Amino acid sequence: MAEAFAVLPCNGLDKPAGALAREVGLALREQGGALICPVLYAHQPARYARVLAGQTVLVVDGCGTRCASRLAAAGKLRVARKLLVTQACKELGESPGEALELDAGRLALARRLAAALLAAPPAVRGPQEAGFGGPVTYGQVRHDKFIFRVPTQGYFFNENNCWARVVGNRARVGISDYMQQQLTDLTYCDLPALGAQVEQFGEAGSVESVKAVADIISPVSGQVVAVNEALAEAPELINEDPYQRGWVAELELADFQSDRELLLDGPAYLALVKKQAAQYHP
Amino acid sequence: MSEVTFMGVPREQIPWAPTIDYQKCDYCMECARFCPHGVYEQREQEPRLVVAHPQHCVVFCRACAKTCDPDALTFPSKPEVVELIKRLRQGEA
Image 1 (cartoon, rainbow over the protein chains, first blue to last red):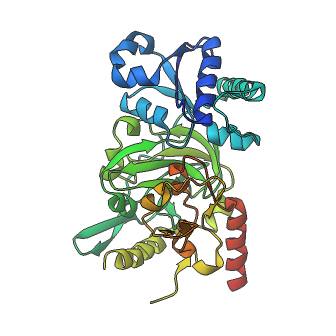
Image 2 (image 1 turned 90 degrees about the horizontal axis):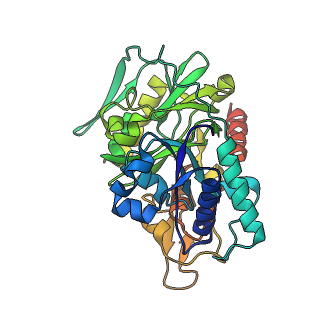
Image 3 (image 1 turned 120 degrees about the vertical axis):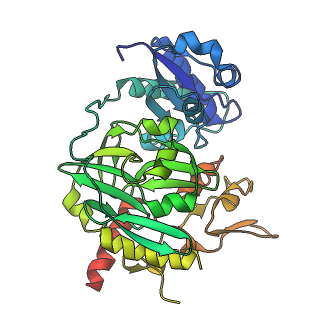
């Protein structure tokens, strides 16, 4: 990475993945990253104001609790890249091990993870504004006091209540009105990493509300070329406008024709919501 | 009550549910508290945690695994399950 960067690692000293995350942080520091102590940052963020001014941040999470990501979101930091140690280990066929003290193999693994994070393609092609801003017409299902809206055309859905709006070779994905109302007020949206390859039905981030956490199951396969950064500061955009301003990620499609076979169009999804609403809100 | 289906396939034909690795599980019960669909059940006797209702598990959801500190929960391969669903749909057609 050419530009200056700061590193916010997990410092989970009581778990092997946390110890590995700390070591990745140290390796990134050797590469010129300014290290942020998550404990001090959580307690006194002003201490890092100078370090963080104008810099992008690499976030290194140890385990699925993703404390570092949450901390970065709470501080509205400009996150350039993210690493989840447990997941990255699995992808490499490695393990964080059982011990808190890292052996030579784990130390080498930490360096590999750090190098991979620095070398990751920036994928800064960015969002394609044209085509995604057009007007949307909605159908709706009423159930008791609830009204669930579903776009009638241009959107495709899976039965995990996630949508894809397809324009040319790109698609934006997000969660449906039905799902956001089930979750109630969202407090956090974990965005997928830029450049990540997502399979159909793979994860494209997750959302969290006061009530529950849910994976965003991508209706389409492809590479993440943009994420909706506004959600880092305002996850409530998903509650307010789930199908447009509340988009989560933009993908360059890998094989939409094949993906399409397993998706529902607007009217078919509307029928599914009607059925689900009847079951869950008797 | 009508049959529960996922993508047109009877849910019972889709082998999607967590598996607990009892060597790793420390019985913190976070997953059981987390899952709103009642997949897990706590028991008085060993094993104190079981996947009691695998059919309640939302196909492709792995959210409970993120609450598991010892990483004791695994799920089937998504691409394999997608392929199976495709085959079952074609068979039905």
